[in-house]
Amino acid sequence: MDTKEELVTHIRNWIQIDNEISEMQKKIKGFREEKKQLTESLVNVMKNNEIDCFDINDGKLIYSKTKTKKAINKKTLLDALNKYFKEDSDLAQEVSQHILNSREETIKENIRRKVEK
Image (cartoon, rainbow, N blue to C red; front, side, top):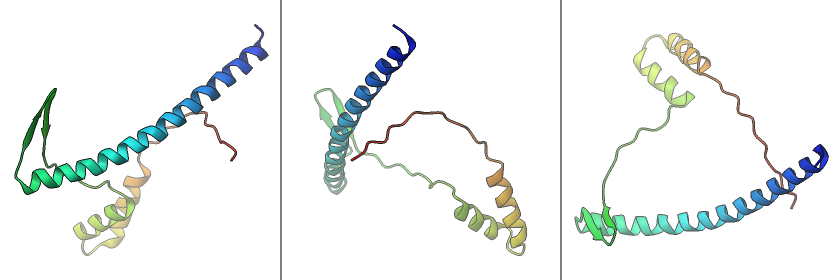
């Protein structure tokens, strides 16, 4: 097989796999939406009835709470630094800019497909 035929074969296979992935992602999206609604319903029932755990055939359904912190963005960082450096907003701005500019950058190479509709 010469290089051109090999390239065409790879492209066809890539497109076929990309199409299959798209179809599966649509199905997964539907499942996730349904699971989200069921989760909200289960959380309400378990919370209101003070149920921590349900025994099921292959394990347990456990109700729990977790605290998470929001991601730090430019505005959040600047607001926090302004509160910390109350009198010196220029210093807060400078520190904020330094932190944002010194973040590591990575380059990711990829091939993506744009489907004409």
